[in-house]
Image (tube, rainbow, N blue to C red; front, side):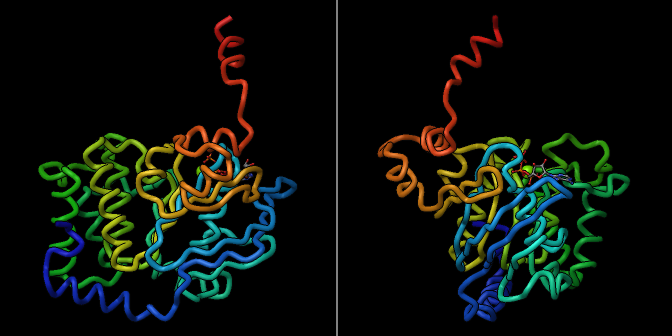
Length: 278
Ligand SMILES: Nc1ncnc2c1ncn2[C@@H]1O[C@H](COP(=O)(O)OP(=O)(O)OP(=O)(O)O)[C@@H](O)[C@H]1O
Ligand SMILES: [Mg+2]
């Protein structure tokens, strides 16, 4: 069904890439990780594992440390203490290897806006070392699947926010990474494209690709995560499957939004709204 696997050879090649590392059960291992920005603590003693084929949702209030954790996981920030291994590679010791094997969508993607989408993806494909035919066919499939056909020749600077976000997602997936770090990836995407990306993450998970992604949209987390980690003030306050979190919150049968509100101690929303409209 998907552009990731539309050709038999590509499928085989991809599965080969996955099985290369199948002995590495843990795709992400975060061990007693702490990070401060000067005096501002952003993460405090965070330990978590993401297994092969897992789609892990990272939830938490604004400023809880989600983006900081992701930036450290892709080698863009150095931790204050603790360690992170991606597919068995220590990020601090070998950030270049980690950057090669990871696909990353930052929370505010910066694209080369003076290029067209095709030129940008072509450039990313070259940087990632894709062959000419493979690069062209993958770019075409991404453009078609995310509804940018006909607009791929326009400058990115003329794109809407959602169109730019699509290009950022395509750029992150082009080289078939085995571990995806997606910081609020569905921001600004229309429902159809968001659905395509969600289904794609499922499909990739079935092939052993692991994903960690942050979102504030709890329906999305509920729909696509095997497990969810909730951060608050830089610490993990809850972790488990959506059902386990419901049990933990004492709210069986409830939506993840109620569970999130209870676990993060958010209450008094009605009073806040009353004060605001006064
Ligand atoms: N560059 C920076 N310099 C100083 N403090 C920072 C910096 N980046 C983040 N912080 C602080 O680190 C903490 C965690 O921020 P982070 O961006 O990781 O949160 P987040 O969970 O991703 O939030 P959001 O949901 O709003 O995206 C916050 O207190 C924030 O103010
Ligand atoms: Mg963030």
